[in-house]
Picture 1 (cartoon, rainbow, N blue to C red):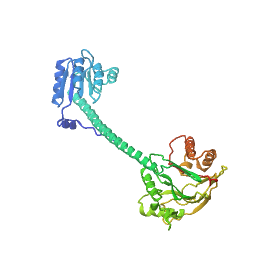
Picture 2: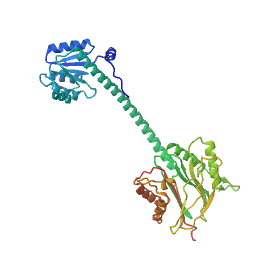
Picture 3: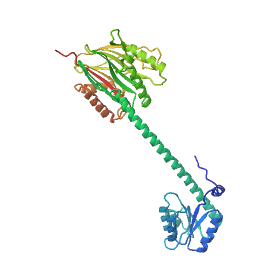
Picture 4: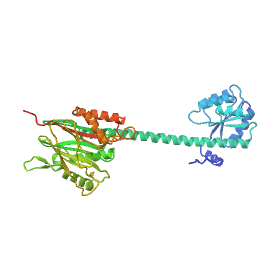
Length: 426
């Protein structure tokens, strides 16, 4: 895009509606100064005269002119030396500098340009040429003024954006604390096992969430979800869905129902996911969908009843280190009306552990873009076979950072680790 330069007529019309530009005339000849001053005042400029370079510099220290007409040869400091000093003075606003000289050599002209001069006029000065050179200078000063104004607008806008960013950053930090509070209990010891939870968002907040809720004294509900996308909208969705699987308000937990004796029982996991799918499609106006895994764990027998809705396959690591990937896959929640889901059973024995991870682990890329995938996860779990409890997740994240060569991952990473210890001997 090209900026249209104002014409001489436009500049003259504009000058009538604003303070006249100040032009300094520097010449040791009083007659030459008066001739030039007469031209300038007749064209609508304000004029200040100086008889030498030193005199001009002193006056510039009190009031920097918009334009300067200076003889090359002046008493005291030369016109070139004055030009250099003038450039050092006029830092805030640009001043247009025209040297008046009888020199024609290219080397001398180049020397003047290197000193900061914008233009040259040959003495004796022709009035028409002078007026044209001043008009050219006016155009440059006008463009400089417009550029300065636009820069000020840009800086003001950037300042406002920075204030908005700082405000959003504070809100996101608060949202991060709230989201982490949803799984503030990251480890829980039971009579027959230990449960550990892990959540690391790729930003302040994310779409992953893991949790658990008691069903009875000997049964436990587990859930892991991964809402599509990242950021605030995904985090809000996980927070709302977490309310459907609340541990603190069992009457509001759609996975539970109260039996006749007042105790709670868990609904079949596949039916619960069907209900969540219906709620998401009918009550939530959103384009988000999610993967979900819901499980009921019998803490006495080690039996796990699991339903999977697009979430990565759960992993069972047996006491001897063998690894089994379980599950039926299933459709993500919130995509298809009347979707149905299957459930399957996993039997844990003392010393076995059940691991439920989001795809942020297996789809974590290395520096070449190659994903960890299930084979890489298996190798990692073999190495972590003897690492227990929350420490297992800590070491897993360290190994994942080594694999990706980064401590920040492109996707949220979350997980549930259930270590089944079996009934204690009496």
